[in-house]
Length: 156
Image (cartoon, rainbow, N blue to C red; front, side):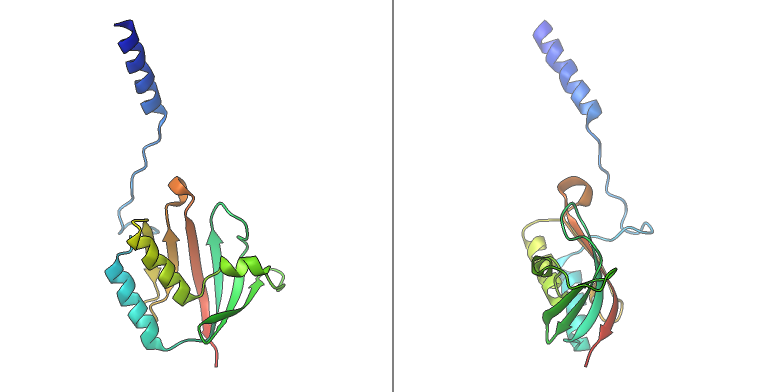
């Protein structure tokens, strides 16, 4: 009897120490709504309809990882051609290029994550459709990654 009571008290103590994570409502200000394959497909269609294949965009990445400094990315004909650290203007190390996806590559990553059952949250540019915020995974729970795409400038 003492053994069961001890186990119960240990379990109760552990439960009290475990943080409870509640999802905030998607309509709460500052909360990025959960992405669905449908919302992602609609945004991707707007992006494709805009016909922008060459552009410069500012990217900030939040994660528990290397290479988190803000960068300016240049994409020509859909391929990343330059990644520069915003603060210094210096070219980022080549390995960081892999961590800085083009907008098309970000759509692919988001879609693959959704298919795998990974949480994805996103906000999209209202007319051009590209993700202005993309969160893959949960930052607090599984060391997910958040990408912010801003200052998109089409290039000729």
